[in-house]
Image 1 (cartoon, rainbow, N blue to C red):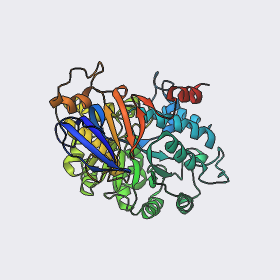
Image 2: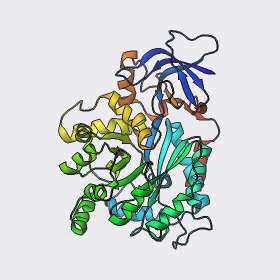
Image 3: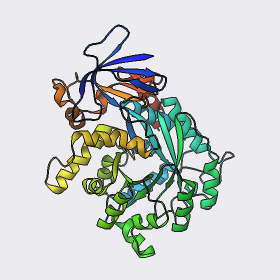
Image 4: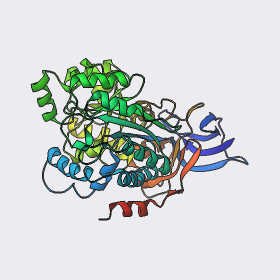
Length: 429
């Protein structure tokens, strides 16, 4: 048994608890007895210990766009052309190297579980590789080497985009994805890329294949998406997906930025999740998602880094509140504890790991320790630790990261990879 003594630990309430011992057996937390001080045999964790942070929406390969696409003028649609140019240049080896470096950067930021929304499937001209899942296996291998838990959300993409994104039809997509085997720290879910890329009948096929698994889709990210969907189908994207049987408690609407009141009620009534990615949504001028209205309607929240404009789960979490303040002129719509739940348990549940993202007996031993001795958090009183971490911490404050009872980051450094060197290697022209 491994015993960790936490100076402070967040157990899901409004405040962090002082003096908590985590007793670990294998990949799980066995018990959390109170312990006012460490004892012989305890490993001491200074700062505040949190459940592992989940990145519920990632396109790892887009890390290569950071700093290259953020300046100047344009829109989501002009940015997309730059993204297509990058995607068209990647093969399985390049995808593996870029994904591994990106996932390792996520680990340094406290992310222990990632949902990779994966639509890079085939060769540049659309010809499948000898292994039709070569790209997906490259991503799965990258996460394993970086030490992260992963749900590969294999995206059905049938029209538009690049030939390398597209399967012949939904049946061919299902046949291909069915050949992907899960691993102890890797699960396979499904994604409908968008209502632009998948017709309603094909969306139904994907939803049927995904029975019992996570199912994600980009939903109402841009007003033009809604306008085109209404023109073609007479319904909003949310209503179209619901009609195809895709919307349920296993469904995650990514972005959900431009929802109607009926869309909000539909997603909330189904108990679906909305995954907000504020740093990307800012970068692409998408807008601000209706997080509070979704919660009030019965939906759950998760957070994601999406295009990797920034990999900082604390910034994604606090931006849900801070961006709504700008839009509404009202402060305090989301409590710090609720934002932290979105970044932990909310994301884990959306990715099909409901026993993660929490510190409790029986939960996965995935955890993160944030130091309180750096310039951003020095002097933080214990009773304000949760609010301080959510509203002031940055990825650089993460000291230790554990996934499944194994250390992945110690004292701010990855235990297996030189992450800056990996990034330089894959990003240098």
